[in-house]
Amino acid sequence: MTGRLTVIYTLASLLMLIISSIALYFVLVSSLHKVHSRYLFGKIHYLRAEATKPHFTATLREELGRGVRKIGDHFYARVLDLDTNEVIAQSPGMPAKRTFQDRGERGGVLVTRSEEAGRSFLQASQAVYVAGSPGKRLLIEVALDYTQDKALIVRYLQAIMVMLAVGIILAAKVGHLAARKALRPLVRLDAAVSRISVSRTNERVDVLNWPGELTLLANDLNSMLERLDDSFRRLTQFSSNLAHELRTPINNMLGSAEVALSKERTAEVYRSELESNIEELQRLSSLIDHLLFLARAENPYFTITRVEFEVSDEISKVCEFYAPLAEDLGVRLSHSGAGMLKAEPVLFRRAVSNLVANALSNTPRGGRVEVSAAREDGLFRITVKDTGKGISAEHLPHIFDRFYRVDESRPHGGAGLGLSIVKSIMDLHRSDVTVRSTPGSGTEISLVFKSN
Image (cartoon, rainbow, N blue to C red):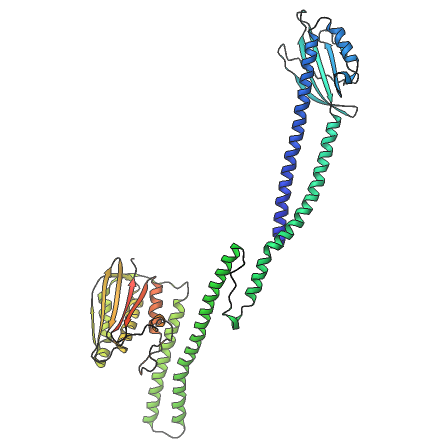
């Protein structure tokens, strides 16, 4: 970056120097040309006035014969009779080149440039009529030797080239120093970030004493580090919980198999052991299915297909499936409400099933679980409400975390993935899930589908 910034700064400075030098060069040349032209026009005006006086021939011959310095330094003039092409008067050193072009009675002043004997001239000419002599015309030619001015322009161009060469060197040096100084905070920021490692995920970048742009970057880095730290802690906790969930059924199967093989058993004992192992394997299979679903749901390329269906039909199927379990637990299960919803039917049933199963497992005998559906303010709300013991405030922010269980001592507790799956399903639908709970009065969890 330092090299690129130095090159950009140098090129920009060089471009500005070139533009400025070209502009100053043309200003100088244009100014000199205007001054020279104005000077020549003045001389022609003077000689034209002299040509109208009586005895103008003798006067001009005497005036121009005195030499250059009488009329002006580096100035020369010539007066010719256009009828006879005779030179009436001429300054010593006047260029031999003629510049006249006959443009009629109203011809203006003609200005040209010429080179002669290593000298540069700016010449002007004009034809005039002689007063008192009808039809008689004179040609007035004037010339200005601007060799020294041309040499000045050449020296100016040489000075510009030297200035450009020095300027580009200075610009490169200054640009390099400026780039290094400007990027010095990035070096400090890099050093601060490099101190952060897996074992120091709580490290943060100091947001003080930074330039405004880097302050924003430092804040963004800290926000990213907080998210990474949170994700790392969740991943660590997830790995620990997953290992625990897998270890328990495996240890159970391993222990029962070792006991069964420790001595000869009857066929009934072996059958019982196999049935117990099948239950543990089914639990493992369900756990793996849940984890695979959560992994697929987090894939950004995982999409769902929504179709429109009647909500009451799907809720009825779920309640019919859990009716025997509710009867065994002594819990009254009911549902109400209807309406058309556009969602993925299989995932919708799975989300409602998880909520109903969770509500039944947390509702004591004699309690109620109600499933309702209603459209409110453009939102479709599916609510599962129970009369269980509720959830305390410190647990509410975590109930949708994986493997999180409010009551670890509950005998029929699952793996703690049911509500996590519900949250993932609602995320796939770009919708929300809300929870309200009062300890001792029950819990109310709602699936809030946004307008289609």
